[in-house]
Length: 142
Image (cartoon, rainbow, N blue to C red; front, side):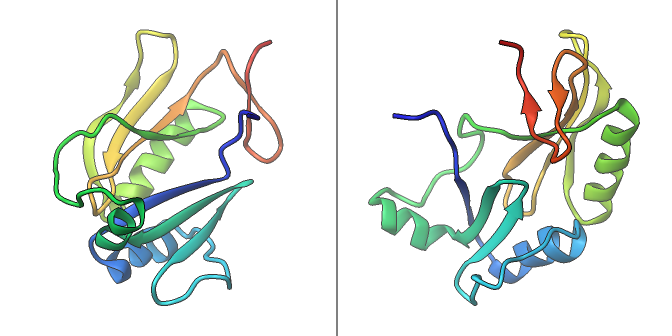
């Protein structure tokens, strides 16, 4: 199987609130393929989908109940520490909950964490050991 992630779907409690956060609050572009039941956002070669949590759990045949940390974070890498600070300010302004302010890291980078309105945890990071191409895709060392 090829190592590739095409879509990340976030189960959300309130579609309108999530659209407000990602599309209006962060300014991310929603695809015309979206409808009232699901939102598709172009995330530079990856699709971020927003779908009602209950329906997502039903589709996967799992229980939708549960809270707290479920062992996954999403991340966006940026070109500099200043971009981390700017992105963190933008997400907080859009309604995110600050989990850890941006700061220097033990691995030599700079990052902060926030939670979206449904509690999905995001990191915004600058990693000086990785490159980013013109589209913002990470270039890992060989």
